[in-house]
Amino acid sequence: MLRLPEFEYAAPATVGEATRLMHERGGKAMLLAGGTDLIPSLKRRQYLPELVVSLHKVEAMRGVREADGRLVIGALTSLDAVAAHPAIRASWPALAKAAASIGTPQLRNQGTLGGNLLLDTRCTVYNQLEEWRDAGGSCMKSTGVKCHIVLGSKRCWAISSSDTAPVLAALGAELRLVRHGDERTVPVVAMYRDDGIDYLTLQPGEVLTEVLLPPVGKWDRSAFLKLRRRGTFDFPLLNVGAAVKFGADRIVERISVVLGAVGSAPQALDAQKFLGGKQIDDAVAVAALQAHAAKRATPLPNTDSSHVWRKRMVQVYTARALKELVA
Amino acid sequence: MKQMALALRVNGEEKPVLVSPSRTLLEVLREDLNLTGTKHGCELGECGACTVLVDGKPMLSCLLPAAQVEGAEITTIEALGGPSTPHPLQLEWARLGAAQCGYCTPGFVMSAKALLDSNPEPTREDIKAAIAGNLCRCTGYHKIVEAIENFARQRKADQAIDRSIDTTATAVRAVALEARG
Ligand SMILES: Cc1cc2nc3c(=O)[nH]c(=O)nc-3n(C[C@H](O)[C@H](O)[C@H](O)COP(=O)(O)OP(=O)(O)OC[C@H]3O[C@@H](n4cnc5c(N)ncnc54)[C@H](O)[C@@H]3O)c2cc1C
Ligand code: FES
Ligand code: FES
Image (cartoon, rainbow over the protein chains, first blue to last red):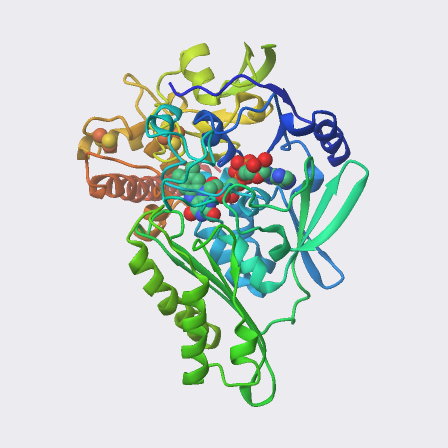
């Protein structure tokens, strides 16, 4: 059996108790939500926390509610519940589709929306058992100093692989973050850093409690597309979240397109610059956005399928996402 | 490391265990409770061999610290039936040869049970979606899908027969009462 490392365990019933525990233990404690990302990481000895703080008893962090015309999703809500929720499906089908595309039925019953947004970055070199990782000389995300993917690189290129992050970033959703004696709300895009090791702006000990969706009506349509090898289940090789608000004569008033899985952070494109004030199928503008998308994406040989092909797919999927916004 | 006393509920029975917090439900089931019907494959969430039901929902016991499911109703393959008392779904599985090496079978059957409990007449697409998290390296999946389909169809037919027996019985009773009265 592949065993977990030994750790102490706590299961507080309130956010306040969880943040207090995280504060007391400094960097030696880790939060556990559904565990579908953290437990495999611990089994691979990618982290060795002294204390694991399970959030599963914090009922206040579970479920979907409505406040001031916005849907608010508790960070502990399962992906299955997000995918099946009638109000989410009606107002933000792209989010429901993204949640439904994650992992397998079992993983969606266990995995949470918060855990998906804060998913560790991934790389074929890093996501291996300890012996395998060490055999080739540990990489910089592990205990070493080198990158085996981009030789001579000063930074780590592990991939941001969350399926909901690009959609929520495109929609302009916000995150409520609580830590001992402090609370803040940040836009989803501000949570990510384009660095495979230091990939989140989450503060030590901070708990993500809620995801605030934009007011219904902020966007006319939203879209989510995912490229993967197997239709049944797979991490994304590329995903796209997009949203649009049309003005008079179907002119694009506001548009937002975010690429995932082609960098260490979701990549928000300058879609407004290219398409704002134009028709969404304006051939020249679409071609310009495609070229811009390809420039922003940095697929590397650190996941499934050829990175050259994935780069081509960035252009294809950017155009398809725009089509989906009018379909 | 400090041990934890957990009051687990497995297949309708209270199962108190004393375990380290880093033990997964899979380890506790197989090694502490001797319920070895639940299999260990990848142990990293990718194969579904370790699928059990937690409050009726299929979950991966290899990714659940046992402490996280205290208070929940855990159902394993042993609750369905064993060699001497197989469940009709297991019989159909065997009849069709939907198990070859059989290692994946308990996980598949648990995913199928969760589906059939919530959706008694699943379409082929519903079945494929429900077993998408279970890998089988032997059968090629067709027989597995067929076994679930056949079971659902047979159960519906049996229920129809039961209903018609009920209706007939009621009618016979009514006639008998009338004759007596
Ligand atoms: C086989 C397999 C396939 C998968 N496929 C996909 C896929 O297709 N797409 C995809 O996006 N993901 C996929 N995943 C990854 C994972 O299942 C999901 O991302 C899931 O949503 C993670 O959520 P969780 O609740 O299980 O997170 P956990 O494992 O509990 O946590 C993940 C991280 O977030 C932190 N965290 C969790 N919740 C909070 C919180 N509220 N506040 C602060 N920190 C928190 C944890 O400390 C940890 O570092 C897959 C995983 C496996 C094993
Ligand atoms: S053993 Fe749990 S999913 Fe493979
Ligand atoms: S019967 Fe052998 S893995 Fe499925």
